[in-house]
Length: 537
Image (tube, rainbow, N blue to C red):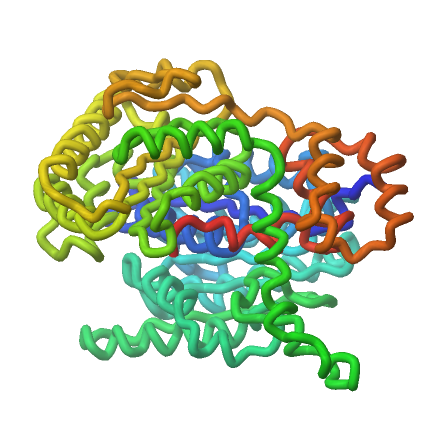
């Protein structure tokens, strides 16, 4: 049967940034843009969320209101959808328990029409439609957000309770109602906690407890504030009207075997195999479709050790699948140094020099164009370097030229010295499947297979992945390694091939969702295996 969109949980991130409010005479928050980038990296790449790009950074209050209203009332929404809204900017708690979010157009001369009253968010996030998302985490990274904002939200939600059933609504405020939030401090702590395997490995549940998560954030905030000798910033958490398991943040250390009762049957199970089942599914999915492009990649790497490729498909999730699939063909992939950079929300869109910060961990504190090229050249003497860029076409033409010049100089640097025979330098550009992408990326020269014998400055344009055909899925299932992983009787598999698969949609994301949910019984669909598609981190 076809997988209904309500049978699996889709995960969305809406990140909103308001760094400047000149009308309110407030200082610009310099780190808002980079904070959004870091939150997206953690939630999109680590947790499998899809980033919603309807609201640009620095949008006016009416743009934010209209975009949120339109998105949450869209007929494509589902009750089971899981949504995280991250808002970073200026805010203030005013008289009568009112709390306001300031935007670029906010002015005291017309306050009511140029600010966002926090209580209004409830009306936009819970419009009361039959299919409106019922699982929402709101993160307010603003000053004085705490209990004042949570109280207003709770009061508003009570007024709408009759129209909303079985919701999971959580609010995390980066500071209490009496404290200013340090610019970037909350995201620093958020990032540190998300990468802290010690406390997460002690959690036995599949999903992280939001209140425990905030406790860990406060430990980091307290430590930082003490070091800086400033007032303690304390995040607060409110969980309102929840009647189900809260599923916003998956525990990467969770193993199904942790929650099994240890009966005689389970004791015989290999816990390692149980823990790696999603990994095995991720691996066999690399046998599905795209084999011609993969062979071109392998041939090109044999011909030349410095190569660039263009990968095209519409969904970023599928782009990550293809990038990881190609990158694993590099001979020393496990030891290779890997970088993945999402341009769409990257600060280099406004200041190209922010690009060099991506290499700070390996190059050192003195980051310049020259030190990055020199440092990567040294690194490539011992191991391969794989750089994946998602959405280079979002850069202005001048910045595309800057990136092009960087790539040429890096290739020349790497080629100028001796290096280990397994070492490669690989650039993979991932873009959506539109005909205009190539036109947005001058001065790169693109060549199409089977022509791959060209200069190192050329980019091999691999054929786009537009569809995964049903017939290909049937042939894929017949492979021994795939069939052996199916926990289905032969007649059930035959029934699926005869009656179900012929009706499956052939768009790549929809097809992979069907495969994960129906063939491998993954309730979360593709989200269950997405972590294994990460290139770096």
